[in-house]
Length: 255
Image (cartoon, rainbow, N blue to C red; front, side, top):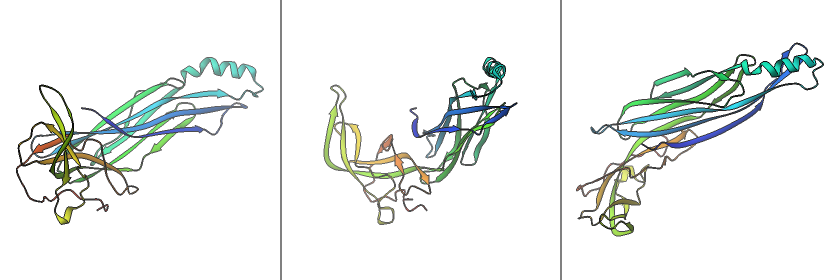
């Protein structure tokens, strides 16, 4: 199962100085929140959607070099490896999951904490939502990083694809596969579909009719994106003999 990264955000911040006697401690954080998703076919017409969120990065901590207490700077530098960071990930998918604390790590160490959440069984065309975020708390400076991503909207989309009688991109010798040119064969109520299908990769030759039932996992950042993004639109393309316009998945207007 190949996970697809769909967002990568980097936050670099200079925190308010933390008092340490008459001196100041400055913390620079270099943490990222990334998320990926993958479908699991349950074999009964439903799919589980696995959303994986990763919080990774490191930080630097330094005492103000103008601190009049030289011994304070030396003492801080000698002991800052004992300062602890506490990572938290929020990963809620279809009402499942929540905020979870990860393993602690030293303040200036690189760390990567990952959490996966299973949506449970989802029907094709069903919209589900994910809340994704992360934060890092410091035993010395309090909260040093916090990021909450926009709401992630996900769906298993369905489109019936019909062959146009042309193909290209054939590869293989003993077993040949080609890209069959198709159009989305959807009825008037579901055109254009969320997941347009312009080609299906399948073994060659194919007996008519050249019709496939296609399922794919799509996402959009709600409410900022109108259309869904698909990277595996023909992962589940099943040959079909139903030669009529289908009721495809259509949520392009945000409904």
